[in-house]
Image 1 (cartoon, helix red, strand yellow):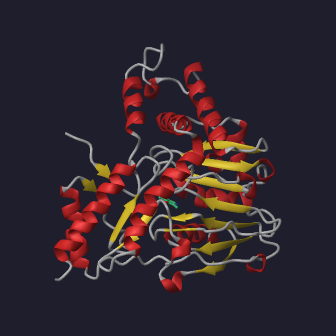
Image 2 (cartoon, protein in one colour; image 1 turned 45 degrees about the horizontal axis):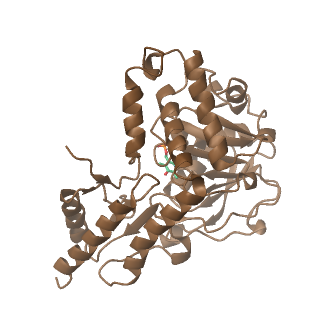
Length: 362
Ligand SMILES: *Cc1c(COP(=O)(O)O)cnc(C)c1O
């Protein structure tokens, strides 16, 4: 069977070259005579994989030396708990910007551990934009400010990095990590589940400034404790070995393709193909405010939910899969992460034009 263009929001499409490399390594990794899935995580071969993955992340994202790179279990959702457990250790207050489903989930989890305030929200507009903030939006004694940088479900992205003064800024970058260059030094913590832009499900990547490590609450589970993870090179227990290896391959692929400047250019061009078309027609509705548009998740719909369903099923028959919007938004969503080739987006736009022509007058 031929591979399709897979627009799934996550887990999502991987570069074909990465899958082929993984396939070549699957049964015997290097000269080890065994698969990565079968070898001790304490072996020299696997330690080289772990160190290689960390090194590739550091190079790709230009991570400053005073930050740790951790590989953790439980995806982004585990970090919704790890962040308050490790960082809510001064005033016990944390401020969250509400910009979608995942920032809501993160704030609800944090409320179990302390005083959570919503500093800004676009809930009233069904999250069609990212709310503006100023330094005054945040409580001066908050232990941290949390944002979700790219809102996977609503197709929005922070058009700015909030100014939080001295308060550490924590960002969920699950659906945009490594899609463009980012100034890591502006953040206290960046975290991401890997299965969108950075590999496969099973590993969460945490990039954390060193001074934020070491003050976890007494009750913090060991598996969520940044200090234990950092002291043990993310191998406090058996890590998600294969998922870490896949992240390394994805990073290697991105580096080979010119790094994040080049990735940004490819991603902006792909997104522009869709948004330019959406802005010059009247069949589809693009609900997101222009200034907040995501270049990773492009959300649109027709006037009629039945027509949206037909769009999704007809597109799938044409080899353009997983375009159904999230139930919180409905309609259609095209996730066009790093691994989505330009050709896939071109085919999607051509399909959209044809579908509009076929159904315009109805
Ligand atoms: C998918 C996603 C999550 C949830 O990730 P898991 O790894 O499934 O826990 C959290 N935040 C954002 C922005 C996401 O896109």
